[in-house]
Amino acid sequence: AQSVTQPDIHITVSEGASLELRCNYSYGATPYLFWYVQSPGQGLQLLLKYFSGDTLVQGIKGFEAEFKRSQSSFNLRKPSVHWSDAAEYFCAVGAGTASKLTFGTGTRLQVTL
Amino acid sequence: DSGVTQTPKHLITATGQRVTLRCSPRSGDLSVYWYQQSLDQGLQFLIQYYNGEERAKGNILERFSAQQFPDLHSELNLSSLELGDSALYFCASSARDSNTEAFFGQGTRLTVV
Image (cartoon, rainbow over all chains, first blue to last red; front, side, top):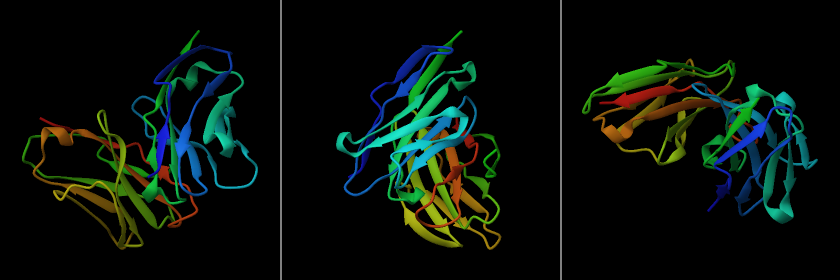
């Protein structure tokens, strides 16, 4: 069965600092990987996705993620965090259809000024 | 704005009642997915419709049902509501059934009292 682990429940960073959110997955085949962000009272916004090809993918809002098959990881990074990035971030793995998406439990990001 | 519209945004109802949640997918998207987000279960896939037909089922209770209409909007019906059904219900849509990402709406917050 597929699964996603986001080991950090809560992370606090200072504005302007770099960010890395961890995601480890378990999947039997080539995974489709996603990062979504959920701001308070908002829906889930797709930040980026990995289907195949270049293992470093760029997303919206200056985020990027790197797929590392050997480590079963898909960590999300941003070089300089803005206060507006405070939100909950979800990693998800699937088979290329949203009917089989498995989400992690999320990482809540707090940004201090 | 993802282009997926859900109504209502908030719903408060009593136990034993029945409610209907509505979703309008992005223009041109044929697939609609329903997800439930609760504190104890996290984000869970409920059901998918593709071009009017049920395509996949997840952890959907028998008290819940859904349909997709010819204009592609979808409704999720929840009946005999229990306190534990209180959650955020998301609708997502995608252009195709596979090899594609899903775009989520802002959700309907259901509170059962």
